[in-house]
Image (spheres, rainbow over the protein chains, first blue to last red):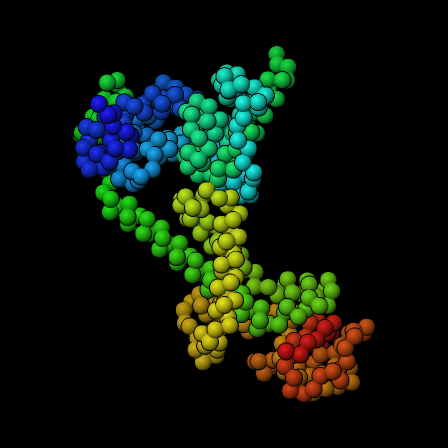
Length: 186
Length: 224
């Protein structure tokens, strides 16, 4: 039997079928929990944020355009929730300004290639070990690309940045990680 | 179903949270569009005014008199209006950033696009019959902000003096401004123009500081 897509389920929820929302929560709860952990949210903090994300998704579900993919839409909500929570927690501005230099100017798109120096597996491991060494600006595109398996366009939609900027941030984030692992550490 | 999922559905079922209707989002989008359009036209209006003030002061002619001329030109620019326009453009960029066609491209394109559009529309409007009608002395828009903006037209502009030549003398001429005040203009030594280049009745713009004695020592002058 054909398994309903996220978009089909979201359309049902929009029509008032609250029970269908349960399926979306079941599908996305593990992904959102994993995404929260990458933002260093654990335990009760992570649980509270997850609830907020799904409640916001439910309240705003009628703003979702079923002609587009559901996944970037809910990740966008999660992104906003996490960024706001980080701001509150650190009492400082997360480095995700609209007028960021990377967002302001055009860049050539540098697509990921297999011969980029390290394998994706190695890079995931590096990322896992040293996420805290990267600023939010570079950390989030790497997480979305390597762990959440989003493409450049979807990452651009979630972070509301041009696709070329996604490429720049991924390349710089990777270079920073490689540099960090090259340097001797105690 | 785990604990988190239970809590989410308990909250939904308790009725503490309600799904927003489609109209809520339509209204929200409409408000965003209205705010963007209002801002856009406010920027156009400011843009036209900036062109108008530039045109009416004649300060742009100062740039042909070297560095001093450039400084006079920059000082005569309506900076309050220019900064207000820049703030409005940034606000418009922030409002427009929610739309995919804006955020999918580098922000500089959106900013340049807005500026180019405003400049083109402002220039287009300044050459239409509407422009002289709106900015003539007969047809004046009224309102607190509007009146403040019109003040720019007659405000003293430091080293820029515009008016009509009423009398030619050996080393300068008498200049009467639109308020009927007369000033004596003397040409600074080393300037390349002579009082004989002008005639009584000429509309001119003069560049130079006014001394404590009221004399304007001109380093540049231009017929309009």
